[in-house]
Length: 81
Image 1 (cartoon, rainbow, N blue to C red):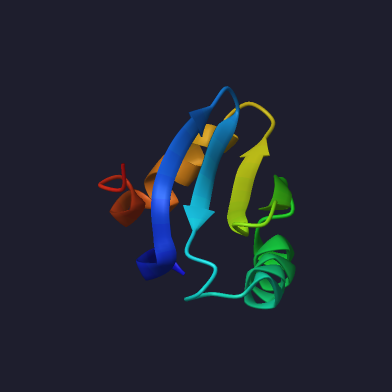
Image 2 (image 1 turned 45 degrees about the horizontal axis):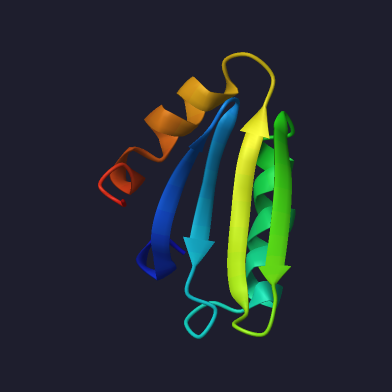
């Protein structure tokens, strides 16, 4: 998943990641979300597919402390612009 991320955007309560949809399909993202929610039920997940260009976004957010958890657990994702 990480290797398919193009852009990282900071949200008030988490992060949004634009994913190369030609590298990871929306179905694969949904499968990842389904697995991840079992281990992190405090996450709010949002998968967005936009327009003809097919921009695929995955947002991870949640209650207080979730953003800091994402920063720690997804530390290697920090270098993504």
